[in-house]
Amino acid sequence: MPAAQQAPHVTKGPPQAAGAVARALRSALAKPLLWLLALLPLASLVWGAAANTLGANPAETLIRSTGDWTLRLVCITLAITPLRHITGWHALARFRRLLGLFTFFYGVLHFLCYAWLDMGLDLGATLRDIPKRPFILVGTAALLLMVPLATTSFNRAIQALGAQRWQALHRAVYATAMLGLLHFFWMRSAKNNFAEVAVYAAVLALLLGWRAWRWWRRHAA
Image (cartoon, rainbow, N blue to C red; front, side, top):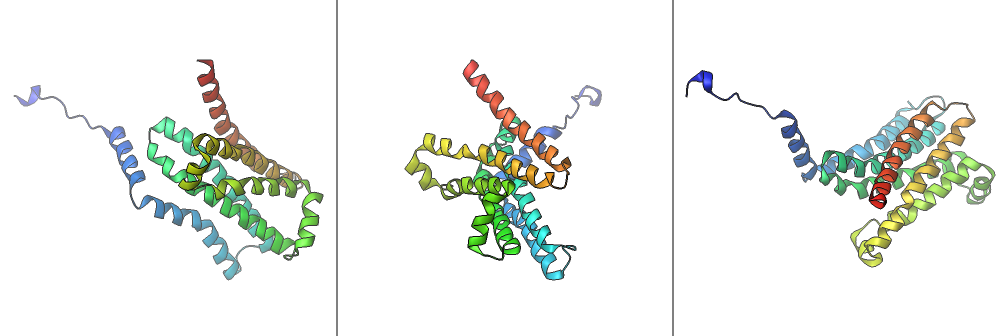
């Protein structure tokens, strides 16, 4: 066939890129990499504490940073399902439980930093302080809601509870996210600083709104 009549070569860039991402998500290295990424904030805080680079108030930095990462990881965990549906990268589902466990991990660290650095690990004083301050009360409630989610994040729990009951239990993550946002709002209200609160509120509204829209579509059909 003459060169002028040859069909032009078409490069399928976006589909090839999407396929590469899908293969990377299924890779055996994907979960270890997620472990490393999720532990980086903790490593940074430990290094900062050892090197004395956490600022004028290291205790506040540790408490605030672990709380920030708890809320960020809640948002990332809730983003998994919408991303799966939008992108078709169904392998994302294999990271959801791990991200949820890291959310709980940073939530526990956040509470321990408060109990240690603010309350001196005095259990009685801590228990008396929690109900006195609304933002700590709702933050503690959010952490307590995560306990049954973390302790049932394995396959035997799904088998023991049954898929439907397990899914119903794990919908408590929505309440956890809202309580976490309220905790953050009340904490920032003392400083009259709501810029970051607005960002998290917008992200959670989008993620929960998408779920509400999907639920409405299923039941309206």
